[in-house]
Amino acid sequence: MILTRKSAPYGVRRRASFIGALGSCILPFLIGLLMFVAGELIILLGLQTYNDPNFLGGLGFILMFSPVLSIFAVVPAFILSILAMKYGVAGWLVAIMTGAVAGVSIFIIGPGDDMRGDPIIFGSIFGAAFGMVFWLSARLSMPQAFIDKSEKAY
Image (cartoon, rainbow, N blue to C red; front, top):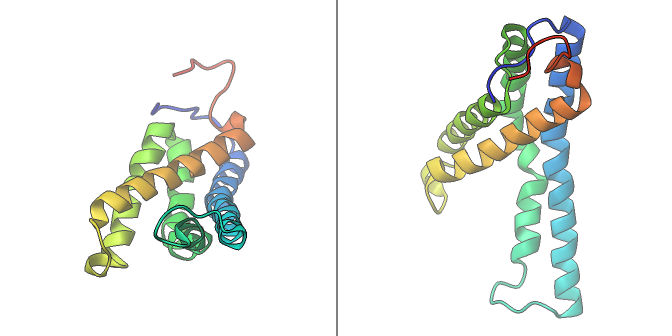
């Protein structure tokens, strides 16, 4: 949950962090693109059953452009994840909590009071999701940065 391998080489830690940053930008874009296309197809085929004609496409459009805002969190997350791996505290719980804090910061500084809803709730939810995608991308791409068979697993 919290603790990870401390003895991973710098190149492995850097590569895992880079792939995590890349994944947390590319995956939301791809999901948003699929949602946008699905929303447009629903309208084109006349299958919408709710009042808002393109809710799915609108949410997909927002997700497609989320990397523009999330880059302000991804760059510091890249650096912090290298340090977290160095000290052995790069677990998934740390990534989720850090993502939530970064998300709240971006939502308060960015849209703030101009958006409908609470920026703390939206920021923590989206930030935690992005933090999990960051950690999962890094963990799946470079497992040797997180665990070592000779070390105790946490």
